[in-house]
Amino acid sequence: MRLAGKSAIVTGGAGGIGRATSLAFAAEGARVAVVDLQQEAAEAVAAEIRAAGGEAIAFGADVSAEADVGRVVAATVEAFGASTCRSTTPESSAAPRPSRPPSRSGTASSESMCAASS
Image 1: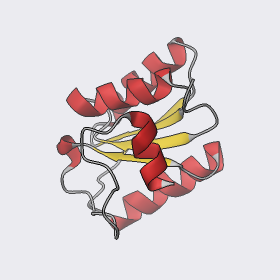
Image 2: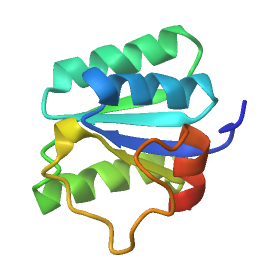
Image 3: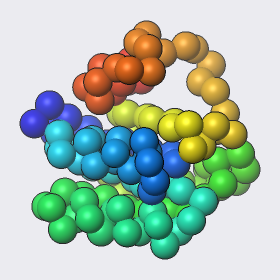
């Protein structure tokens, strides 16, 4: 598993591309924090990851609200240690942009997305 020992925060992680990203990170061994506006939907994806043998936690959060972002990051670090992968999906386009551009395009594999953000 290419992402064993890493942790990921996936915003917009309960639907569409975000769900697929959450599941892909987990399938590669990452511990996943599934973040979505809809807590129940985020929990469903986290439960799916856990049922497959992975580690996941879920958050209902608005990533355009600084307090929510702080809460998610703090709880993820407490649960998994430092986040080594981040994924902002189109469903969460209100998310703040990173201060530096990623080194790969949006089509990068989960492994390279982690390498670009670590």
